[in-house]
Image (cartoon, rainbow, N blue to C red; front, side):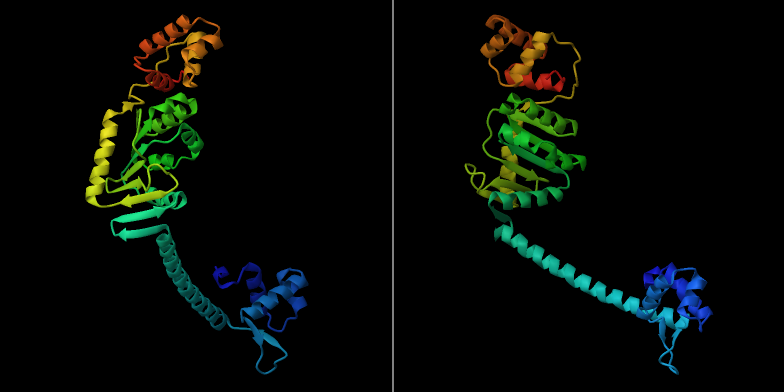
Length: 326
């Protein structure tokens, strides 16, 4: 119970022995507490530091243990004073940290008005967007004209996973070209399983993020992703951004429908054709690699498309991935 005062069990044992046997030598104290004399000497020094063992007034060469009411109460008061001092220093440090954080934030953003933040450079934009994601309350909408390689590179480290696990409702529109990569489709499928709504379109105008329908993040230069980004809070700009997102969302193809897996078996040829198509192979390459005629390869592809109700190779890849066939 006295450890917050710096008096542990061993120290208190020596202190108690000194109070009970005030005229004892260190050797006698060591025998009383059943500890080595070297350890007892260390504990005596600790009691001196705590001012629980002080020189006797009448004989400065002798020492005595201070009465607990005076010694321990005084020690508690000193500790309280030290803690108050540390608390004051901590409050000052926290205030300083807040000032530094605000100054750093000003370095990241050049504000032209209260409703606009200009984030110069990809690194600054990424840091600020991560901060905005942490503060997202309900919705996070994205137009993501990213390359397949970028999707694969994110992988399990995608910050979107953390948002979905927090219950944030995410809508993402990707390019249909992502269907050419099995890894990209698997990534999208994981996003879907976590609750993300995903659609795809042949083209997208630019990268766009809309947070809680209150702010929009647009690229500073759509042709140069390293230039940075601009955050708009102006209601008119946000409304235009939402309209743009809604337009591409409406024309997008659902990548994953509510109906789940179809466990119908595939023939070895069908399975291999799907794998090659998912890798971006053309009918001619499929036929050559499988040692079958071009007509046979096309017939297998057509049968799979009809079976999965797919109107294009993109839809075929998505439907097959959804069922776990590739």
